[in-house]
Image (cartoon, rainbow, N blue to C red; front, side, top):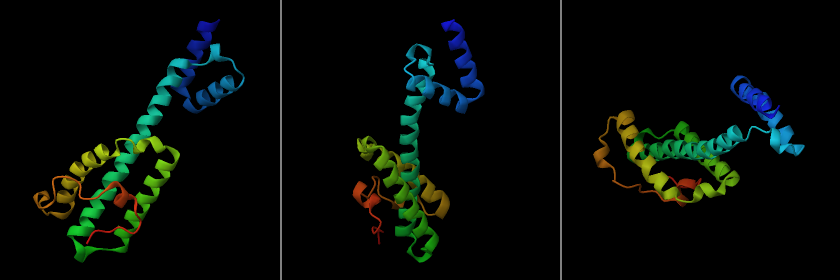
Length: 151
């Protein structure tokens, strides 16, 4: 019977993720640990952590790209750019509030996204990325600071 439950859960996992999640949450609440879909639960928990890290990287990429444009295209600064900076910082800070451990090794994420942002800067502006520094000129604190805008 336990094998049938596991097969049913995997099928539900594949066909209706939301229902699968609710069902397994209820099984956990009831202490029915022998009935939960442990393999997929473990996979989903690991994915949650990776998703948070990907979101942080994505938001840092957008933020750094816009800071570079702000700094190197001062004549094109706009309220739209300010709004993008503010939104990315707000979302980064919110993400770090809910997952503070994302701060560990964040400098490596910043450097990786800076490399990507340099290329994006060149693509968006037509200005060679060679005029940019080779490492990110912005600290983690500056990236999170609502008042920081490089001149």
